[in-house]
Structure formats: structure tokens, C-alpha cells
Image (cartoon, rainbow, N blue to C red; front, side):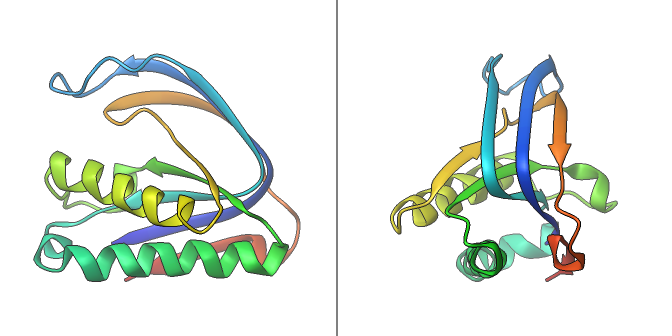
Length: 136
């Protein structure tokens, strides 16, 4: 799994177009404030340890959120972080499980429409720690 994490005072998105024919239609807009934005790239090797990958994702989001006193996050599956992709069902389910875990501890969590391109407005804080790259 590869993660590009940002601490964002503001992140907004809007569905632009559908990219996976099998994905359900999900044309909407969303916005989070004071949030960790996680661009997630799941790889085939991640499918061998779904629980471990999920835990690493959740821990990294909680860690960065803790640095800024945030209790919100937004997941966006971002296939541009690597050349090998996990199965679409695995990636979608990974984000859903991670979202449920964060919500169970009081986070407000948004997820961009899976299988769709989105436009974004991303405001990233200036601190160095507001931008984190992880390869797990």
C-alpha cells in the first residue's frame, strides 16, 4: 500500500466522471475541514494481509490527525501512486473497513466516489508534517 497523506484545513470534491463500468453511479460533492486526506493506492501484495493493511492505514490516519488535533478524514483511492493495482473490490472494501474503524472512535469520515474521477479543492497546511508519504 502506498499512502499520500495531507493535513488539510479544507478539502472539497465533486464527481466528474465514472471510470469503472462496474462501479455504482455515485455523482455527488463533499467537503471536510480540519481533516487528514488520505490518497490510497492498494497493491496486489496487500490482498495477502487485508487486516494488517487496514490496521496500518487506520494507524497512519490517526497518527497524523493527532498531530493536528483533527477528528476528520477523507479517503480517496488514487491509482497513480504505483504501477500495480489490487483488485477493485479489495480496494473498495479496504476503504470501507478503515472508514468504519475510524468512525467507531469518533472520526467524521468521508470517502470520494470509488471508481470515479473527481475534481478537488485541496488546501494543505504549511507545516512540513502536513505532507506525508508512506509505502507500507
